[in-house]
Length: 126
Image (cartoon, rainbow, N blue to C red; front, top):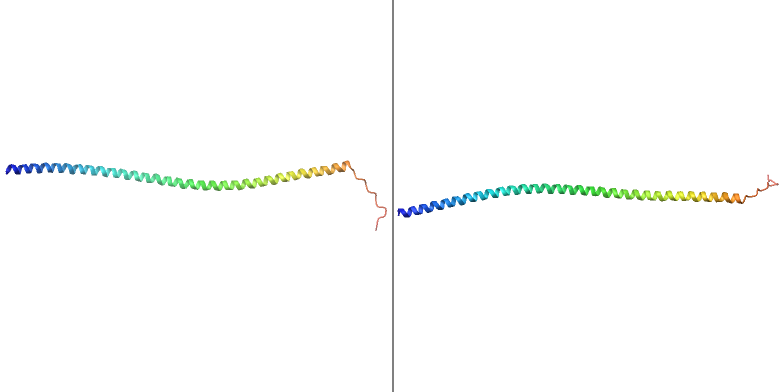
């Protein structure tokens, strides 16, 4: 029985060594997983920071677009005002030319057809 006990002992010792190796390997694997999770957490944090910056840039872009739209509206109103003012100025210049032409025409008519002087009234009424 001594041999049989010794066989069990050696088998138990071998099983213990295998179990110890398995536990050691499991510990190494768990440590690797912990490292990977830590790296993943760092990458997730970094991605969150990048997403925050993208969000901030989008909000700033939206503000710039709003300001640009406001500036475009102001420019359109200014352009419309200038266009109306330009049309009014052209109308005034045209009216001046027409008035000058009419006055020149009247002077020309007077020059070509001078009016006869009217004789003084012999019977003035008191």
